[in-house]
Length: 531
Image (cartoon, rainbow, N blue to C red):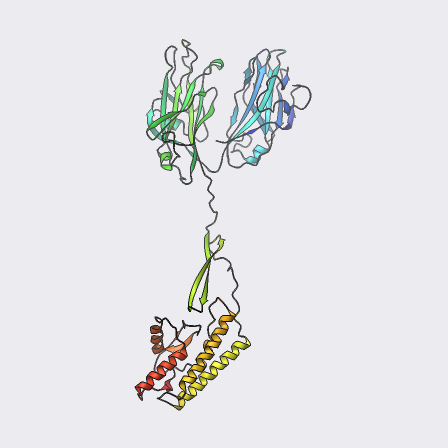
């Protein structure tokens, strides 16, 4: 679990301690060092009255879930029997530990850990941290006893948003710790599964040792919850335990170990130094059994627990009724940060069709479009050109219309047979259509030519038989556009789609006229229009 350490950087709201060493400078810079300098710089007093300083701390811009805030102090009493405490000021009120008796040596006071803000009784916020002040507390109980403080600081224990926390939820393979307050074996896991530690309310407790021989030891293992999130690469697994012992201060050598089992193998951490309730942890960047990166299936099968030794110091010393305790266990899985979109997104493409006039085919070009948040299509990347009919286009259409009118006039004069000079008329029409088509292609290079005016062909060209149903068919060749055709023409068009050389409507007119002339049947004439 990451820890933010905050050290004094300015005067706080309260300053009651009377003296400092050296005398120059401010109170806060006598207790701000990262490594305690003990008798070099310190604050001191010789009063039987409680004296308190509160000191400002730097602001932070960190994010994540704040698990706890812990205050620390390092003190000394010249002739013993001095009193000290650790604490903070938040919301305008001082909150501290109980007084602790000081000896005539430098030592760290028992830390004061707070899992919620004592002023609001709810979880800490980063705004609370930025308004926090750390406490220096001193009092003597014997006349002329000088009490000194050389170092104070605050630790903020927090959990990044990418950390997955799992706690015991079932008995594991071992239930060997002999004593408990709470659930008995095999349900010891219920004594160590709380989110906020209850310390002396529920716990498991090791055995005693009366001296001589090896110290007694006992162990538990617990299964843990399955992770609700099982994505991302696991970069670290930290196993946590909250331990203490009840040995006398000078003999605090009760030993506890964090115990794990993975892949059929058991692993034990190095020895923890005990005293008051404190959190300890061991980090595993890789699975200790495989020496490879963790997998989520290995996390699911992992067991964690405690291995408790009784307090002991040397052979032959009686430590009857001295125990080591465990009140809480959990693991924290750190995984690579994954950013999930807050809204559903879709990535789309621009699809552009371009007409290849040499091969008379369409090609499709794809380009990456924008990203939107609600599955909508993006703003189109290009603006289509306005296909306005200019003077040249109108001239070309008039020329085609004249050819059509001339052709129709000849057909009416010679019903049932091919009109004279038909080939010349057809060639003239084909040339006009080519000019028009080529002109449009040049005007719009690389794109499909626009459709021919459907209305023009319907007015000047299409006269379907009243006995045959008609249907509009979209032309697929050379930009000739949509025309009114009957079912016979649709059949012809379908047959022509397999050809390698596309034909124009004038081509079709020529072929059909020549075919009818060959047949010389009186029932087939041109009076019904083009079919």
